[in-house]
Amino acid sequence: MELLTLAGLDSLDWKPRHYVQGPDGTRYGYDKAVDPRYEFPGMAVDFVRLKSGLIIPEHYHRKGAENFVVLGGRALFQTRGSTAEERREQEVSSRDMLRINPGERHRVVNLSDEPFYLWRHAMKEPDDSVFTEYPELFEAL
Image 1 (cartoon, one colour):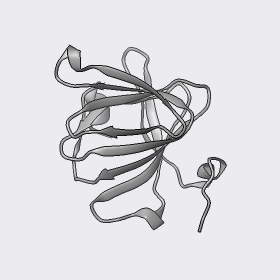
Image 2: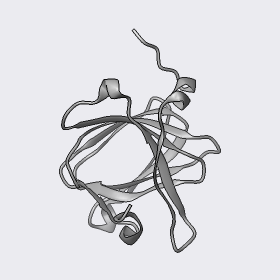
Image 3: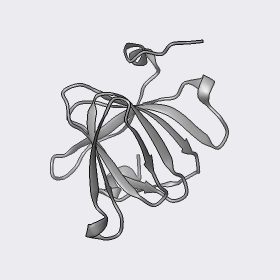
């Protein structure tokens, strides 16, 4: 048995992802850590860290659903479908769980001065992510 604590997450091998500033001054970017003990073919099992003041840009996945468990911090998940009526916002904090369905556009905004941590499980498909918020900034990254 191994106990993984929130403090212990900082010792993971974090890799920066999509750190850019949008034309309106919005700051994007997050860190991802993959523990090799949890790597499986066709599946993504990883940790996400969203630092204070940053946003994970709006995107969707063509085929894969994502399941999240909030490990620490506070953030706003924003989702939308193809119409304005399908827009939703959900504030989340420790121990909350979420599912994002294939095709569901989503973004995450850190609401606190502390990092926001997620555990993520998803089916891994090549080129499955489609950025819908400033796609020109992210597709080349």
